[in-house]
Amino acid sequence: MKYLTIIRHAKSSWDHPDLDDIARPLNERGKQAVKIIGKHLQEQALQPDLIISSPATRALETAKAISEFVAYDKKKIIIEPVVYFGTSSAIIEMLKGINDRYNDVFLFGHEPILSSLIFQLSRTHLEKFPTCSVFRIAFKTDSWSAIKTGSKELSIYPKQFTE
Image (cartoon, rainbow, N blue to C red; front, side, top):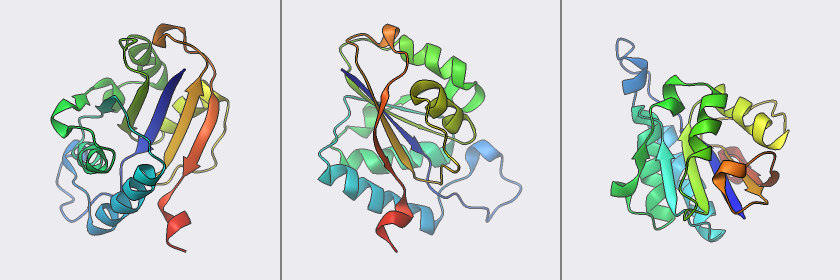
């Protein structure tokens, strides 16, 4: 089995509107959401053996913060430009190239590309994929190069735990 956990970056700051999109950091609400989701992932005993992130500051900050909850060395996070600049099909091609020694991959990125990726990989149509949301897919294969359509294992978002 191969597992892909797709996580949208947490809420970003718009305090500096002149800042390039790729450089926007998390805001306080985003940092709180990361703690809520990170704690839940920890309680579920989800532990990635590979984390891949968009190069955007808000995605990388989300990945680094979550990595602390899931016992992953943040220095080992792979920054993959295709997650920010590419298409969902390009991301799938990148995923198909992952070394098969990795069984549980966390991917941190952005909308609307993540919703499209989720649909392509699980046939699940999401009305909305809010910031810091998580969607986990299981693939019945031993090889990333063979991933096709998987089954939904988990779908959570921060407001589920705060209301």
